[in-house]
Image (cartoon, rainbow, N blue to C red):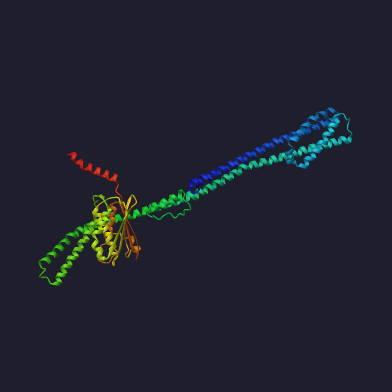
Amino acid sequence: MLNTIRGRILVMSAIILLFICSLGIHYWWWMSTVQQKLLLSEQFEDLFNDILEIRRFEKNYLLYSNPRSLQESHDYLQRAEGLLKAHEKDIQRVIGPQDYQAFLKEFAAYKALIYRYSQGAGAPDPQQMQRIRDHGKLLVDFSRRLLDRKRQRIHKALKLSYRFPLAMMGVVALALMGIFRFVSAYLLRPLAVLRETTSRVAKGDFRPIPYQCDSQDEICLLINAFNRMAQELETNQEALIQSRKIAALGTFTAGIAHELNNPLNNIYLTAEMLLEDHEKSLEPEARELVLDVLNQAERAAEIVKGLLDFSRTDRPSFEEVDVRKVVQQTARLLKNQLMLTGTHLEMHIEDPIPPIRGHWRNLEQVFLNLFLNAIQAMPQGGEIQVRMGCDGKMVRIDVTDNGLGIRPEDLEHIFEPFYTTKGVGRGTGLGLSVTYSLIRKHGGHIEVQSQVGSGTTFSVFLPVLNVEEETAEETSRGENDVAPGRDR
């Protein structure tokens, strides 16, 4: 759950909510305690008032010698004694056990004296009167001290209760700072990096986001998806540039090829007629020169043919093709050349291989170019491995040789027109360009992996035939074919 931002936010929210609830419960308990202290303070104040009433009746007795005053004080003594018993623990907690026990002794002595003289024991002598006053004064002092201390505790609790909201505000502020830091670290900063990288991508810079992902949360998944998108954009951008380059060169070479074709035909026909008409009269040296002209004219014608194939932009008519048969047929065409060069070709084809939608001759040209490149990469002979499989959407054909390999600096240029790693006179540099163009026309793509001294692998990816799309397209073509007849 903590691996995602949603989970972290939920956990943090739960913690904050739990903390706020605990603070609220604590504050409620605190205020309840203050309320209890206020109620207890009222009881202590009642005790103090009862003792004051007892002293008032005591003074009336001592001044007027009226025993009835002492009898009336009995009710207040009983009330005071009841309050003392009811709140014994609270009084001990406030005033202390020792002081409370001393107070009880004074209270008992005072009560005994009041009870004695209220029963008609006669008038007290001055010494007894002083004892009554001293005991009464101690009772008043104790009750006043008890009430004062309780009030001090209440004031202290109220001061703390005033600070409690401030403490809660501080805790909430710290929580908000933590949330802001979390949002800044896990959301705002990655989004800022993503925004900057998006601006770079818009300018053609497809470097991935340099962001270290410690977990697989939403931001990391977004950044990984963006990096994959940038990589795909870079690949497609390179393919687009390559396609535009091929298109531009195709237009240029088409004109040159057409202009060269007629002179080359004239040269070839003239040389051939010269050889046929004057073969007997020609000197051996002259005859060798004419043959050389014919050979070079044939080579030039092949170059022109390659230029025309390269510059052809029309989309061939596609049909259902078994690519397995195309590869096998191409291998049979090169059977003699494989034997002459001492090259062994081995095929590994997974079953089943679904059909594709393509042009037989164009696909044959693709694999012919790849096989010839593999043969030429192994001058002393070698082995060609052809592996074919399907992942359900694309048919993959790998052509692997154990030849010389391609240098890393040449890999990014091998599909460019007229770029070749072969020696002078051994290639036009159009084979792989034509192959690249034909595969793109089939809706596929080609990849290459190579290591110098270990060999090269060309991987061709062609989309599997979609029966529904094929049926829809045939229906559309049929409707288009019938439509003119309706007009007629």
